[in-house]
Length: 191
Image (tube, rainbow, N blue to C red; front, side):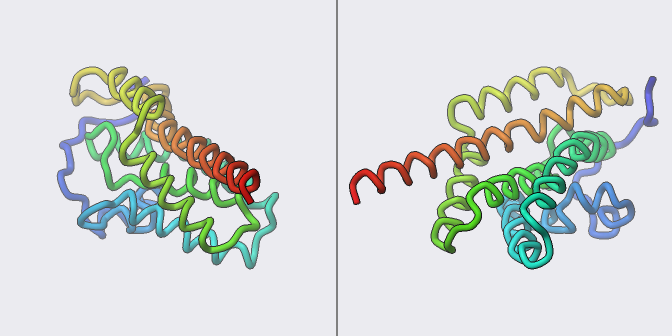
């Protein structure tokens, strides 16, 4: 079943285009993905600010629910918006960075500002550089996309593409948390 008609690829989505649908606004991190350079960093910064504000209103359990639903719903959001853009993994789609960094922050909370800065720096490093397994995950899903066929994708393909967009960010979150845990263990051993 194809759910979309043919789309002409969109080179530079506008503010108006992004905010014309809730799924686009979420995918683009409420506009942070429209940053002229380093949209992934802008999306991660937006996630950090939103998390700090959310800490005053949400419990840890509520945050975990939001993150879990955000990951599951994000598979459709990221896949669908990339389908509308006509691109496999458009850099302005930052919902993947947002939910993955929220996961990092909720796991390390409570913590101080310096640990949050470290988490931000590590997450951006792992997400941008994609060392080792993170790069393998990213390449695996991009390879599965195959050609630049512009025919409409099935719902299953859209969800799988969205999962692929999110998967490498979840791996970056895992490596960020593992690195922080190792640093914490090393510091506690030497101090």
